[in-house]
Length: 403
Ligand SMILES: Cc1ncc(COP(=O)(O)O)c(C=O)c1O
Image (cartoon, rainbow, N blue to C red; front, side, top):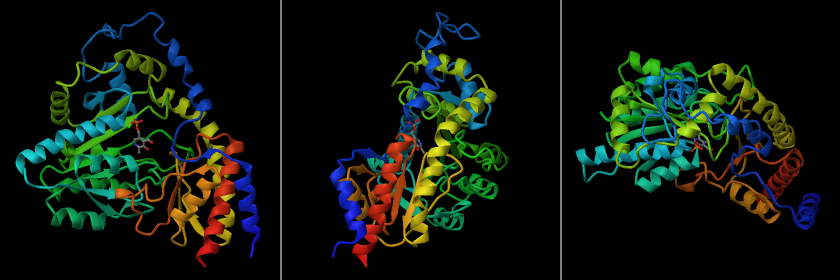
């Protein structure tokens, strides 16, 4: 028997759509906000204290760019390395450095990392690529489940670290509570002696709701409990300026920063300081960043609101729940029945690309096959509307098949 949902789905199949809700990329209107980056040099290649940015040197970055990183990560610029165009590269390099140290101590050992799920697929890919085993831990509205995490790190010395996206988490949009941040800062004192907390603050400035819960300063807590050498902060301007040509930052205690700089030295003489200067002139303090991010919000907020509106029938039908992020780039949708693989295949056949089922879990395996990540930033409103209509149709259709 053909149901009305089958007929609707058939219409989408016939429409020849090509829509994409996969990666969290800024749309062209957002990229346009930073076009004046191009005018920031204007023949003046010197930093305030006279460094010629066209030349070699300065692996930690120019002072102005380190100040920008300090503003984003809420720490003194002396703790900051301003890098190239990707924080992911810095995270990867940082873990290669740490892995070498762990292996030097214990060459035969396999090491593990705690992954908060659902989480960011590329963190998991880094672990897989480096042969680091992943242990999944869930979370609630305050952040990761710390009771589980504390028990795990106490009992297993091969657990060497944890991935955290503390603000507007990818994909759920959560921001960790103050108590969670304080307990996480203390975690290294319960764990293996060279434990590292990867604090990927990619969405530090990306509030959709100006009243969004602020994030507490983990470095301040860590300094108070003497765990600062175990905290590695990361951020970038990928979703502030140009996603492919921004600036990345790493924040570390002074001894760790020195060690990481020494590790990187054989690989490069310095990052792109011309781009660092451009960025530092465009965003020369917290006020500039706030103004710039308010312009992003004007573009992004209606798209995120539309996701909430379009998904509403699924709540009425009891077919799914989803996050209501106060910022960031994603909405995390959980189906009531295990059918994410089926929904994503149905959408794909109808021309709507979604992030593969399981991508938000280590090894690409969602044990419940229920989570779907929605990235609404890139499509225009018309494409977003169409893609969400198709997604809703596919979820209803999959639920009928499963009954
Ligand atoms: C949590 C998180 N970290 C890092 C990145 C990538 O950052 P970058 O462009 O600086 O490498 C992303 C991109 O989606 C992200 O969601």
